[in-house]
Amino acid sequence: MKTVITYGTYDLFHVGHLNMLKRAKELGDYLIVAVSSDRFNKEEKDKTCYVKDVDRAAIVEAIKYVDKVIFEDSWDQKVEDVQKYNADVFVIGDDWKGEFDFLEEYCEVVYLPRTEGVSTTQIKAELKNQGE
Ligand code: C2G
Image (cartoon, rainbow, N blue to C red):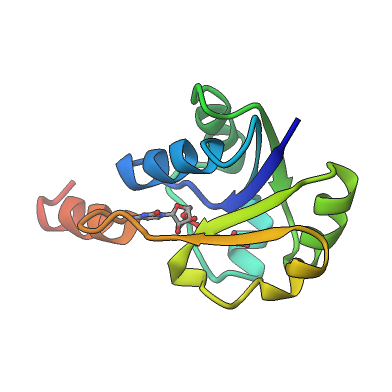
């Protein structure tokens, strides 16, 4: 069994997230997704989410490509996760290209092109403009 692992916030889940999870699953047989916790987002990623972490995790878990969801609570947990879950592939969008090359010592590292034209930031801005 080839295990793939990826990480993300997945706030206001959109088709860019879905495309990434679909392509991540195509790299193996079992996909683990680490969803950023509210604490991690607030204190270390300086991101404020609309959707709380347990709900973001529930949405991701319901995606047919996803086999297991864990929480991401630290920048430093990736090596431990890759070893703990025997991940063969770490995959993430190319907006992170190069950031996680250190994982090549433990697994294959793949950066996939992002889906253009959609982002949580853009959705938030459009909602704000519509006064919602
Ligand atoms: N993504 C994408 N296309 C988009 C938006 C996002 O392919 N239009 C991908 C990102 O590249 C990432 C995943 O979807 O692989 C989740 O995106 P975010 O929720 O924005 O994740 P991020 O905040 O970048 O967190 O430790 C790594 C971080 O937790 C990643």
